[in-house]
Length: 469
Image (cartoon, one colour):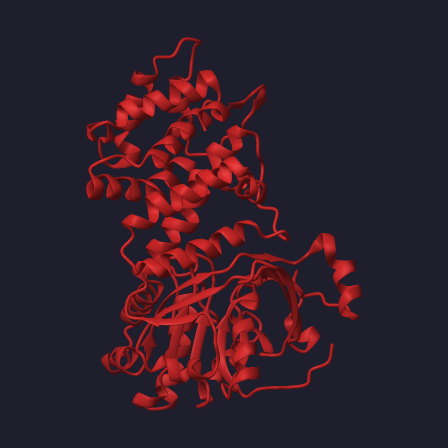
């Protein structure tokens, strides 16, 4: 590996993990190559550990291997030597170097992905800590340093793009920084500068990043012709939705390159689309496909029976109740089907099955209720998935035990529900539908839901899911 380009330092990135490197840094590398974005990244390692060497050991260079099904339905594999990262600063060891970043007037972007648990507040953090324990604490300290150095200048602020997987992450991050400004008793001018000089964006990110290819390392390095300790792999599909002002399109040079980056007024419809179609398809697929005898997402979507069931559920029962332009929804759904067929990803159904009941509540139930309200009838495939889920929690597939993973009260509930030999399926389903601790309401009041779910459960348990499908 040899660097052929180096870009001026314009981006601070909190986090060095596989996702950011295969998603954000990959996109910035393309923007640098195809446009005059001309921006280099300084990575901040936000936690203190020595087990993983710094990216500096490879001069910030590493390779992304992007694989999957393209728009033409062909399997593709693309290697890219990422040159957008300049250096990495371990903030626990080089705090002064970290704070010195505030001096650089060219830096205008702050990006983060510190996991869902990263945007938190800790009242024990102090201004004088080197560093603070939380990401928002560290960020507040850096922002205050910037504010002081540039004397509160309105053009010295940043565009802040948190990528943590929480709703309205930009809003939550700003509120958390404001809390630190309050407990540290920082002046009102700083709080005004935080709001007026900085652009806080919420984001939605979407790409499956499979990370370091342990089993393929030697084969890939042979193809590349060099060793790479930071090689990372991801799927072909990606989507970056940014809730922010329209001028961000020019800042990101989106008029000069065709990339799946969207600047929108509200990320909520995109979140509902992803949860309803991508996550929803996973959740409705798991109990049906697993009881059918399949083990992975790929073989499920390619099976003529299960694949047909999943596609019809998505296109006929989920898409009709999502509030977005139909073409956007169908295009996204088709891309999801292609992602499920990715020959380079072995996605086990059981790995998706964790907490399936709460997933059904958040991913499928809103579409079931929306469909019922809109059409005054029940979406049969979504109801069938609920019946299959109840049967899944019996904990057996033929003679094989299912390794159920869920909250203790859910597992205890189903253990009692399936106890004994002779089952009254109507009574069983009624108990499930009345589980208000889970659903937040009594679902047995929905006309016809108890009868239809009971019928499906009876057939699945006694005749088998293959016959029913």
